[in-house]
Amino acid sequence: MKNRPTDSPTIVSPEKWLAARREFLREEKEFSKLRDRLAAHRRELPWVKVDQPYLFESPGGRVSLAELFEDRSQLIVYHFMLAPGWEDGCRGCSFVSDHFDGALPHVNARDVSFTAVSRAPLAEIERFKARMGWKFNWVSSHGTSFNRDFRVSFTAEEVEAGRADYNFGLNDIGADEMPGLSVFARGADGAVYRTYSTYARGLDLLIGAYNLLDLVPKGRAEDSEAPMKWVRHHDRYDHVAVAN
Image 1 (cartoon, one colour):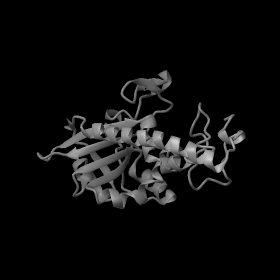
Image 2 (cartoon, rainbow, N blue to C red):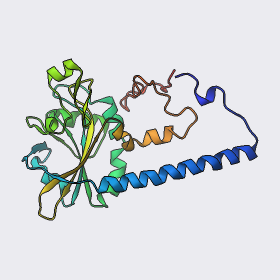
Image 3 (spheres, rainbow, N blue to C red):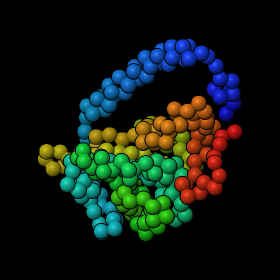
Image 4 (cartoon, rainbow, N blue to C red):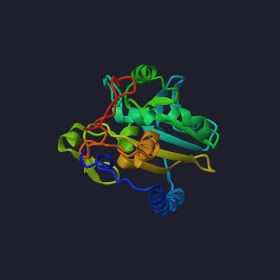
């Protein structure tokens, strides 16, 4: 990208720098308050009961959606793009997933379980998971309608058309798999309810590396047409990736 702030930075005195930083702090505080309001509104969204008896393949055998909660009342599912026969998992999903393991002890302590779900058979998931060195729970929805029902897997006809029902509307899709995240809760009646799902840019919240990049002068330095083009699987960075 051209015209990055580092191309021609404004150099000022310490006094002017402090004044500019204090002015920007007001904007940051406004954003923090807006984010808190948005999070509160998200928690107030209605729930919908999940009646479909989904079964997944796990390292311990077949498990239901309810069993993925373990002994907790809330469950986060990351819809990881890994279809049957793929040699690698999606680079973008892998970028996101590099952030999970460190967070999970803290999330589990707050009554939340986590799992990734992919359409690939379990053996293919386990092979890629071992290569990446991840520890989080990851199960296979192979042979079920789970991915289709949660609008993260698409037919050949939809892929050819380039548009499908994704992210709560008719939107562009680039492959037969797309990323997403869904949240579930166990009700007082013991039933499982879907409380939230998010897709596309809604997944930015999961990427701590982006938060770090947003702090530095060059920012994310991404191509607006292909923002994650620079991302690699973490075992395939053979040099420092710098955007042009």
